[in-house]
Image 1: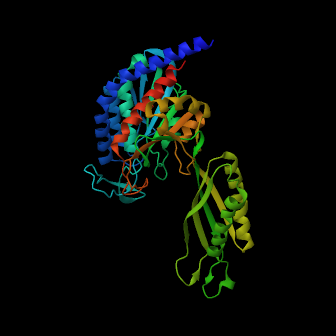
Image 2: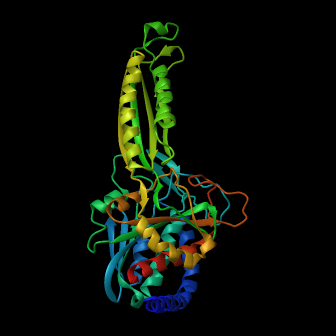
Image 3: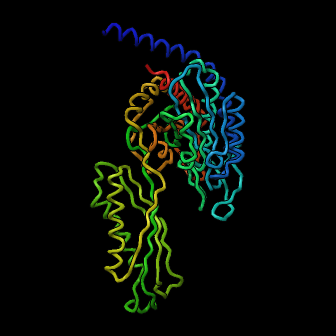
Length: 425
């Protein structure tokens, strides 16, 4: 039994080595293209649900590779279907394609100077989260795999998703709309992979976490009703600003005293409060808007329930009234443990074992999570920081930068994860 198993391992290992050798030339040929594509997308970014030219470029590339191409999914989404020479499972590979309403502030030769409209205002537009690199990497994977259909047992579905950052007010969009419109069907996808570039992770490094990886994001709106009075006579009214302060303070006790933070992290943040018109008037009402971030659905249920109980009770205790509305923005980005266990050896083979590292969960959110609610998924982080760089800039900021030398590792990893998943024995 041991000898047979060892022999099989040698044969499979040998086939992987041969596979890598055959792909090396394709990787070398595509790297410069990937960098050029990335810089073009960076220079000409488009906002969520408005990624018209971006989608046209993606579709043209996929068609040039001989794929079946679908456009207009979830408004501007593009899907390419690549069938291998042998039947088998279907793997989905996803890249998000939208940019942010951020004005770029650097001296890159491919700096964006684009202007768009967001919430009725003219804004600068920038790929300030690295989605331009995600598009270019997946286009590179599509090119490499399309030249190696003889190595594919099954089908690869390339999913270029709009509006990851959120659809404009009053519109649908993103992963949830793609799913609603059938992106995981015809052919039915068995598992899905996605990556995110990271500006503070060194080039050549991959980081991941099994299970809950990124938080579910919820939006809440609290409306407080008091009684207006002169600022000099607070006893004649009910102060909604004071009530709001008590509510904000109370909400934090849910995290500090009721949530079991040894299981997972959780956050309640009030990001906006609006009330009053004048310094000497106690207003009649106040509105608070904020976010809840959770990595565990039981904790999410507890936090939601306690917020719904606490908000009206605190308002009543101070003589006012308050209502709270909670809506879901994203689900928990949950990496299927079995899929992670299966694919980490591939990542270690491509990047080197020391360069594949586990990480703690983060409270940022990602709508890749909607795909993972339907099918097993694996979402990981790719290094985009120049090694030894002492100054890095966070995502969603005007100074955000990515080192292009890290993109090829993304192409290799996504390519070989796909092949190993489809061709596993």
